Image (cartoon, rainbow, N blue to C red; front, side):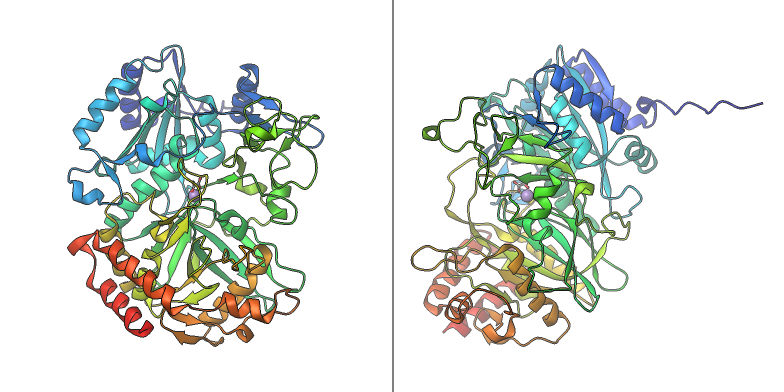
Length: 590
Ligand code: OXD
Ligand code: MN
């Protein structure tokens, strides 16, 4: 006689701590109903259909963009809000001068009043998720509660969400609690609070990106950076990419650039035709969790399962992989529409916008058609260059770490740090022109150490000390480099073509890691000479190459003085090794 397959345990009964927390949130927020996410494809389809029915999503041209949709956010809710983002540690010094701080009890009290009754008439979604492959010891779990179907749908794409994550939580007992409500989307009643000592997040009043998809910046960077310090690893704002040389050797590099400075493009790079035999594999485009391995190397996983990428500028020339990837199964946010219902954004060489990102007839006098921070949400598996090791529970070994920023001048195309300790100083000294990824003025140079200024969940000085400690545990540490793809000539034109051509710089780094390429010492670190880079087929004159690799001692003395002033803000907490490295650089520059 056939036996019936037992019904799976209802999600609400899998983990008692999760169930108790959900019940306490339900009592506070008073939703009309509670829905536990299984994380299945059918559920994703159902959420999409619901949003279309409610008029929140628009289906795009099914011929050209099958299963793609457009979502328009509230025009006052289009980017991360760093000024409303807080780290709430018991001691203010633990949050550091790099963070807004609020005393935890005061923050909880404030948020409780905002959350009280805020989900009346709405569905409360419970989204258990795992950051990293569910079977990886390097992964960590969380649960987001939200009252936004759009946020729930994004989380199902961006993380490994649903039953397997909750089963892991039930086994392990620990999870990050993320409570989110869009509230009334009122910028005056908007806060993103982090409680690293409690592994919890409370976010109210925004439905956009890093403010609302709590697995991403809030958990995988701010809370995870704290957790990583306690457990001996690093949570970083880095892409991870595998580079296979024509000889068939694959090396992985991790690169930290500030938001909207080309991480997704570098992670999905297409080798130029003049560099035959190279292959590129994407592991991650935004966040890396780096763990010292038993073999003395640093091993990395991408905690995310999808991309929340900046749309404007994406085209067949700049990033063909991304361009192809977002032609199906993609959720667009705040792009424009053509007359035939296709998505449109600045940087597309064809088509023209009819409706702008706010749903109004397009009028160039009102600014760009697509919002400069418009985004695509898409599963990483749709990436044609998805690495076969992206789901490897061990992660991938990292040969090189790259820091970079968007600088018109000062920083050369590439240089290598003298040592791990010098590399930590190089990372800590990163400065970059601001972009539309966060609310505020665009194009002003600001310090963005390790590209973590908006994301480090504790005092930067303690974070740099932790970097030095992790380096001390590595018998085979990655080499550390700094790049600047954005240097300009006196007329303001970019000196370097960027995109696929960046592979030439990466190839030099890999040769350095294998002790095969030359470099010359300069005051700031080790630089290639133009002849050390593979320039076959590259349309850049020798003069431009020299300009790109030049170090202006005068400008650098100023840079060192600015770095000294910046680090001084952290007082006696700055590790002595960092001052020693800065003085070495200062002495070498004369
Ligand atoms: C992002 C960001 O969305 O860094 O990745 O702002
Ligand atoms: Mn980012």
